[in-house]
Amino acid sequence: MSWLIIVIAAHVLNALVFVLTKALLEKYITNEKVFAILIGILGLIGFVMAPFGLVFPSLVNFSIDILAGATFVWALYFFYSVLKKFDASTVVPVSGASVPIFTFILSFIFLNERLQLNELLAFGLLLVGTVVISLVRSKHPLTIKAFSVTVLSGFTFAISYFLTKFAYETHDFVSAFVWMRVGSFIGALVLLLDPKAREATMRIVKKTSAKIKISFIGVMTLAAAAFLLLNWGISLASVSLVNALQGVQYAFLIIIVILGNIFLPKIIKEKIRGWVLIEKIFAIFLIAGGIVLLTLAG
Image (cartoon, rainbow, N blue to C red; front, top):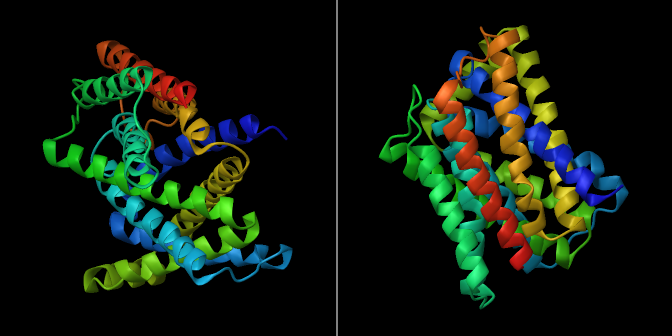
């Protein structure tokens, strides 16, 4: 199967997951830290892949695997804390646009990479698109604090993706994937150091209705499928190419929100109409164009 099909499928699934996750955060699992913790704990399910070639890497590689998984869970926490209160069609592109910017900064520091003229243009498009979509006149525009936390999530995701690509380049897919899931579990344990998070997690596990648990498991199953496909794509192609296709995710995100307004208005509450829709599409074109140009430059 072509890596392109794999990555597009992952981004489309992720768009659906983001919209459904926001619905869960608004109505049922209202503590964003608990949401990230549960995802980190469920990461241990990755051990089902152990029989297909799990080996223990060197201490350095093992440490990188653990950090890659842990930072992913922490990035989710930052991301969910904003997604809970603001429009998915704004939060997701801002966070997504931040990732390639910080990925380059990491490459600049650790790999001695430098920007060419077309790469500067790409970053200009990313920055302008990010500013435009964050200032769209929606019902819930991003505050300065929310914007900062969203960018922080992008920075943390960039660290995770940077380490993930390194892991896949230094040892086999199964071993890297499984040990990174252990890292996600450890990242969840760190979040559980917060007494309020522990209490909220236990309350949700013990007292939440079966319907909500099934809904959560369903969304997490979709998220796991998207995550597995995305990691598979990263292992087969450049992480920059994988990130470049996030424009597909943003486009489907808007489509899903619009369809949700029509068919599931009680679940999908975000409204995208008129000039707000036009402004968001324009901003997404800028962001997608910047990501694609950055990829072509690489």
